[in-house]
Length: 196
Image (tube, rainbow, N blue to C red):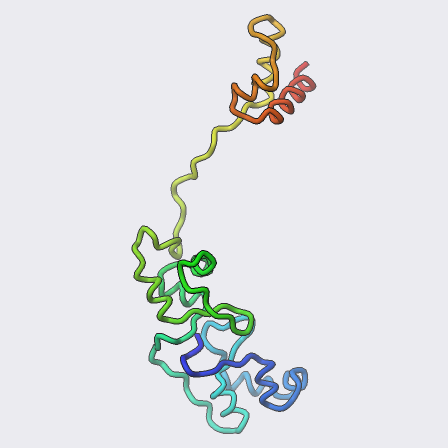
Protein backbone atom coordinates (compact mmCIF):
# COMPACT_ATOMS: atom_id res chain seq x y z
CA UNK A 1 0.00 0.00 0.00
CA UNK A 2 1.17 3.47 -0.87
CA UNK A 3 -0.44 5.92 1.58
CA UNK A 4 -2.23 8.88 -0.01
CA UNK A 5 0.02 11.89 -0.46
CA UNK A 6 3.20 9.95 0.37
CA UNK A 7 5.40 9.38 -2.70
CA UNK A 8 7.03 5.95 -3.01
CA UNK A 9 10.56 5.24 -4.17
CA UNK A 10 12.23 2.12 -5.49
CA UNK A 11 15.84 1.30 -4.59
CA UNK A 12 17.18 3.09 -7.68
CA UNK A 13 15.39 6.29 -6.62
CA UNK A 14 16.69 5.86 -3.07
CA UNK A 15 20.27 5.62 -4.35
CA UNK A 16 19.69 8.66 -6.56
CA UNK A 17 18.47 10.65 -3.54
CA UNK A 18 21.58 9.52 -1.67
CA UNK A 19 23.66 10.91 -4.53
CA UNK A 20 25.35 7.62 -5.48
CA UNK A 21 24.88 4.87 -8.04
CA UNK A 22 22.77 1.89 -7.11
CA UNK A 23 25.78 -0.45 -7.01
CA UNK A 24 27.63 1.92 -4.66
CA UNK A 25 24.53 2.27 -2.50
CA UNK A 26 24.11 -1.54 -2.36
CA UNK A 27 27.77 -2.02 -1.37
CA UNK A 28 28.11 0.68 1.27
CA UNK A 29 24.75 1.88 2.54
CA UNK A 30 22.04 -0.66 1.80
CA UNK A 31 22.43 -2.75 4.98
CA UNK A 32 22.00 0.26 7.29
CA UNK A 33 19.17 1.59 5.13
CA UNK A 34 17.21 -1.69 5.16
CA UNK A 35 17.69 -1.99 8.94
CA UNK A 36 16.16 1.46 9.46
CA UNK A 37 13.53 1.77 6.70
CA UNK A 38 10.87 -0.89 6.19
CA UNK A 39 9.41 -1.41 2.69
CA UNK A 40 5.83 -0.26 2.18
CA UNK A 41 3.28 -2.96 3.05
CA UNK A 42 2.38 -5.15 0.10
CA UNK A 43 5.21 -3.93 -2.13
CA UNK A 44 7.13 -6.71 -3.86
CA UNK A 45 9.21 -6.77 -7.00
CA UNK A 46 10.22 -4.00 -6.66
CA UNK A 47 10.22 -3.17 -2.98
CA UNK A 48 9.04 0.39 -2.47
CA UNK A 49 9.90 2.80 0.32
CA UNK A 50 8.12 5.87 1.68
CA UNK A 51 9.92 9.02 0.45
CA UNK A 52 9.54 10.84 3.78
CA UNK A 53 11.09 7.90 5.63
CA UNK A 54 13.92 7.68 3.08
CA UNK A 55 14.68 11.39 3.33
CA UNK A 56 14.65 11.25 7.16
CA UNK A 57 17.06 8.30 7.18
CA UNK A 58 19.41 9.87 4.62
CA UNK A 59 19.56 13.10 6.63
CA UNK A 60 20.18 11.24 9.90
CA UNK A 61 16.81 12.09 11.47
CA UNK A 62 14.40 9.62 13.13
CA UNK A 63 12.29 7.73 10.61
CA UNK A 64 8.64 8.92 10.86
CA UNK A 65 5.82 6.40 11.14
CA UNK A 66 3.47 5.72 8.24
CA UNK A 67 -0.11 6.95 8.59
CA UNK A 68 -2.38 4.33 10.13
CA UNK A 69 -5.75 5.75 9.10
CA UNK A 70 -7.01 4.37 5.78
CA UNK A 71 -7.67 6.94 3.08
CA UNK A 72 -9.88 6.37 0.00
CA UNK A 73 -6.96 7.50 -2.19
CA UNK A 74 -4.41 5.02 -0.79
CA UNK A 75 -2.91 2.95 -3.62
CA UNK A 76 -3.24 -0.82 -3.25
CA UNK A 77 -1.71 -3.80 -5.03
CA UNK A 78 -3.96 -6.36 -6.74
CA UNK A 79 -3.70 -8.62 -3.66
CA UNK A 80 -4.55 -5.80 -1.24
CA UNK A 81 -7.46 -4.59 -3.41
CA UNK A 82 -8.67 -8.19 -3.70
CA UNK A 83 -8.56 -8.63 0.08
CA UNK A 84 -10.79 -5.57 0.52
CA UNK A 85 -13.11 -6.57 -2.33
CA UNK A 86 -13.32 -10.19 -1.13
CA UNK A 87 -11.93 -11.68 -4.34
CA UNK A 88 -8.60 -13.03 -5.53
CA UNK A 89 -5.84 -10.86 -6.96
CA UNK A 90 -6.33 -12.52 -10.35
CA UNK A 91 -10.00 -11.48 -10.32
CA UNK A 92 -8.96 -7.85 -9.76
CA UNK A 93 -6.55 -8.07 -12.72
CA UNK A 94 -9.19 -9.76 -14.87
CA UNK A 95 -11.81 -7.16 -13.96
CA UNK A 96 -9.38 -4.38 -14.83
CA UNK A 97 -8.77 -5.97 -18.24
CA UNK A 98 -12.51 -6.31 -18.94
CA UNK A 99 -13.51 -2.90 -17.58
CA UNK A 100 -15.40 -4.12 -14.50
CA UNK A 101 -13.04 -2.09 -12.32
CA UNK A 102 -10.81 0.86 -13.14
CA UNK A 103 -7.66 -0.16 -15.02
CA UNK A 104 -5.53 1.11 -12.17
CA UNK A 105 -2.38 3.13 -12.56
CA UNK A 106 1.09 1.85 -13.28
CA UNK A 107 3.88 2.74 -10.92
CA UNK A 108 7.31 1.09 -10.90
CA UNK A 109 6.10 -1.65 -13.25
CA UNK A 110 3.04 -2.67 -11.21
CA UNK A 111 -0.66 -1.83 -11.30
CA UNK A 112 -2.20 -0.06 -8.31
CA UNK A 113 -5.85 0.61 -7.43
CA UNK A 114 -7.26 3.12 -4.96
CA UNK A 115 -8.92 1.96 -1.77
CA UNK A 116 -12.15 3.60 -3.05
CA UNK A 117 -12.05 1.43 -6.20
CA UNK A 118 -11.56 -1.71 -4.09
CA UNK A 119 -14.43 -0.67 -1.78
CA UNK A 120 -16.70 -0.13 -4.80
CA UNK A 121 -15.74 -3.60 -6.08
CA UNK A 122 -16.63 -5.07 -2.66
CA UNK A 123 -20.23 -3.83 -2.90
CA UNK A 124 -20.89 -5.81 -6.06
CA UNK A 125 -23.73 -8.34 -5.87
CA UNK A 126 -22.63 -11.78 -4.73
CA UNK A 127 -23.65 -13.53 -7.94
CA UNK A 128 -21.41 -11.16 -9.90
CA UNK A 129 -18.59 -11.07 -7.39
CA UNK A 130 -16.15 -13.38 -9.17
CA UNK A 131 -13.82 -15.97 -7.72
CA UNK A 132 -13.44 -15.52 -3.96
CA UNK A 133 -10.29 -16.46 -2.06
CA UNK A 134 -10.17 -20.17 -1.20
CA UNK A 135 -13.03 -21.04 -3.57
CA UNK A 136 -13.00 -24.48 -5.09
CA UNK A 137 -14.96 -25.58 -8.09
CA UNK A 138 -17.06 -28.47 -6.84
CA UNK A 139 -19.18 -28.95 -9.92
CA UNK A 140 -17.38 -30.48 -12.88
CA UNK A 141 -17.53 -28.57 -16.11
CA UNK A 142 -19.97 -29.91 -18.65
CA UNK A 143 -18.04 -31.66 -21.34
CA UNK A 144 -18.91 -32.68 -24.81
CA UNK A 145 -19.35 -36.43 -25.06
CA UNK A 146 -16.24 -38.22 -26.22
CA UNK A 147 -16.04 -39.07 -29.87
CA UNK A 148 -15.78 -42.59 -31.22
CA UNK A 149 -12.83 -44.77 -30.40
CA UNK A 150 -10.75 -46.67 -32.90
CA UNK A 151 -12.35 -49.87 -31.59
CA UNK A 152 -15.85 -48.58 -32.37
CA UNK A 153 -14.86 -47.62 -35.91
CA UNK A 154 -13.14 -51.01 -36.34
CA UNK A 155 -16.37 -52.71 -35.26
CA UNK A 156 -18.25 -50.70 -37.90
CA UNK A 157 -15.68 -51.79 -40.52
CA UNK A 158 -16.10 -55.46 -39.50
CA UNK A 159 -19.91 -55.14 -39.69
CA UNK A 160 -19.57 -53.67 -43.19
CA UNK A 161 -17.22 -56.51 -44.22
CA UNK A 162 -19.73 -59.03 -42.89
CA UNK A 163 -22.53 -57.38 -44.89
CA UNK A 164 -24.42 -56.23 -41.78
CA UNK A 165 -24.27 -52.60 -42.84
CA UNK A 166 -23.40 -50.43 -45.84
CA UNK A 167 -19.88 -49.23 -46.62
CA UNK A 168 -18.05 -47.20 -43.95
CA UNK A 169 -17.24 -43.67 -45.16
CA UNK A 170 -15.71 -40.69 -43.43
CA UNK A 171 -18.87 -38.66 -44.01
CA UNK A 172 -21.01 -41.45 -42.52
CA UNK A 173 -18.78 -41.80 -39.41
CA UNK A 174 -18.68 -38.01 -39.02
CA UNK A 175 -22.48 -37.83 -39.04
CA UNK A 176 -22.97 -40.91 -36.86
CA UNK A 177 -20.58 -39.77 -34.08
CA UNK A 178 -20.79 -35.97 -34.52
CA UNK A 179 -17.12 -35.46 -35.35
CA UNK A 180 -15.39 -33.70 -38.21
CA UNK A 181 -14.81 -35.49 -41.49
CA UNK A 182 -11.06 -35.23 -40.98
CA UNK A 183 -11.34 -36.89 -37.55
CA UNK A 184 -13.47 -39.63 -39.10
CA UNK A 185 -10.84 -40.18 -41.83
CA UNK A 186 -8.10 -40.53 -39.21
CA UNK A 187 -10.14 -42.97 -37.15
CA UNK A 188 -10.92 -45.13 -40.20
CA UNK A 189 -7.26 -45.16 -41.26
CA UNK A 190 -6.12 -46.12 -37.76
CA UNK A 191 -8.84 -48.78 -37.40
CA UNK A 192 -7.77 -50.37 -40.70
CA UNK A 193 -4.11 -50.58 -39.61
CA UNK A 194 -4.68 -51.71 -36.01
CA UNK A 195 -7.73 -53.96 -36.56
CA UNK A 196 -7.22 -55.60 -40.00
